[in-house]
Image 1 (spheres, helix red, strand yellow):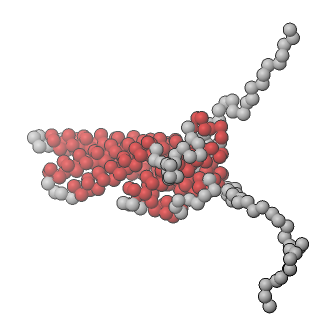
Image 2 (cartoon, rainbow, N blue to C red):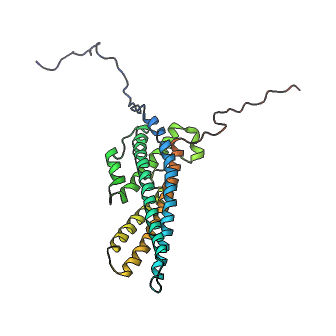
Image 3 (cartoon, rainbow, N blue to C red):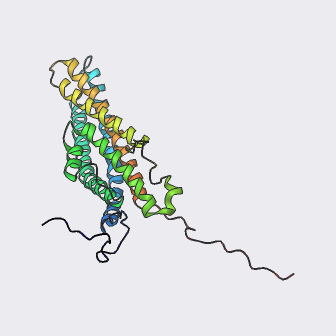
Length: 275
């Protein structure tokens, strides 16, 4: 036994000659629908983010009032009703911030996870991270200080890339194209909005940790410093919440941009007139 031998003539049978060309794998049928399904949660995040920002500013005002009372308490006896009102304002606004923030997270995180995976599917390429990895980067304390900004930058970049494929007419309005948010090396470019959110997010986390550690002290100075840090935490939380709402607006417009009123119209030349 050995290799076949056909002599000087090549065989006249076999598979017909064909040209093999690379074929791009089809996108998932439900990928575009998955992106569209995130528009409603993103619009809800806009309202919840604004509500969180309002509560955070009210909490900062309550903390400022508490700080003023601390300064007054050094030289005068404070009315018990004023102190009770201040404590109630601090607790009430803090609970409001917490509830609004939790609702924002519960609504926004699943939307970002779906956007991340759906945009990668529409672009016909593998997602940079699995859904589980995205979820951990968004929610795991400590890691999310870095991971959340990374995920948002990737998501915005990929969603912006889908605009050209799904809504060619929207490039002029959204200012996006297939690679508008990519660096020369193909990596996602962090937009100014995401960068501002990321800086505020990290700063808020650092201030929160400092406020907790300083609050462990038992001296009057430690109490005053803790109140000051809580004011800074509330203000930066309001900034984060406001930027979250703005980012949700940005992503929702990328997913479903407004169609120009005259998209698809063709200008027809006027009919010739008789001389």
